[in-house]
Image 1: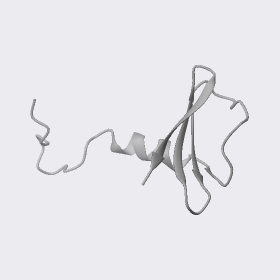
Image 2 (image 1 turned 180 degrees about the horizontal axis):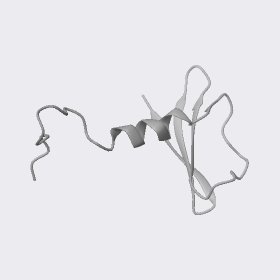
Image 3 (image 1 turned 45 degrees about the vertical axis):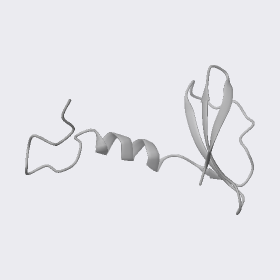
Length: 68
């Protein structure tokens, strides 16, 4: 599988716009998310100054990965 773009005029992935729109709407919180969101899949970023986590809500629970 070749990951290089086939069109030399378009150096970015065509799905990049959709991904950026999704990331633009992610809230940055100063406390971990606890409420059930309105959508079945949601994202949030938690930052308290020393710890940064990327939270994902799916299957009814919040899960996270620690960012460095």
